Length: 364
Image (cartoon, rainbow, N blue to C red):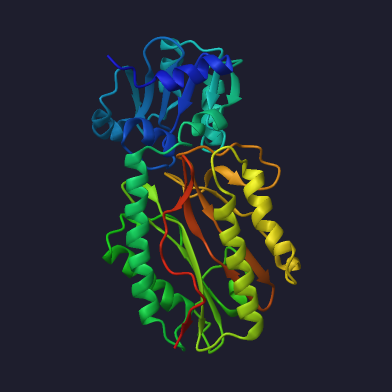
């Protein structure tokens, strides 16, 4: 019989710990093909280097947890009594001296509950190794991402067809959201960014209800739908009625940087190499002082995951990795331009999973 926990057992052995702890999130969902809400109630699965796993589960989640066909002991607890006794029972069942946790996912109160239940417990950050299991996407996972991307691109086309001068950023955001769900998104991959004029120079802007878009504005839309548990992440910047000479020059610079990212991507290069190729284009332009971000990040079950495309990251790119190619230039108080594609590393180079046009677009 196949041991579905073999990868996590190996991580425990490699890190020299007794077990790996998983909590709800992308790594949990990858293993069990079932998602649970993250809330005030701890849910923890322990996968030992050897032997049967065990879990601590809120009583109200037991029937949902049954869907996992979990092989080990389950220790449940109720809101009325709290979870301390359940942790203590789990500790008696599975004595531990060390454990690897998801450093970017596990919350502090669960860490405290574990170190109380297992006094002297050595807690190791296994984020890189645990999340590393998601680095290489399977063909089925790539297909799910492509479905999320296609519906997101259809939603973008719907939205741009409806944009009019005089609408607020919030109104455009509402059109985008409705379009995403009309096209079949299960949920947002992340809160969308819809930003015009000076707001577009804020890389993580929030849509304003009190700003109506005007002729000459840059309009930046950064968004994605989720489908089959996987994310799309797309950015396009368009202009309303006309684009100034400066806007056209900035856009051309960002587009050339984006294309340089594709040209630099193939198995064997590092994340540093790709970022250096992209950022070098921006640095060589008259707009180098407008650089505010790295080139991109990995994409999959999370909208931000490894590999992180930045100088200094020696992560070697391999076929099956997916990353976002999103150079941008941002003039505070004026406007910003970002162009973002989702890129699959292939055996002989790369392939863009996004296909939405990125020539300079003026909405009239």
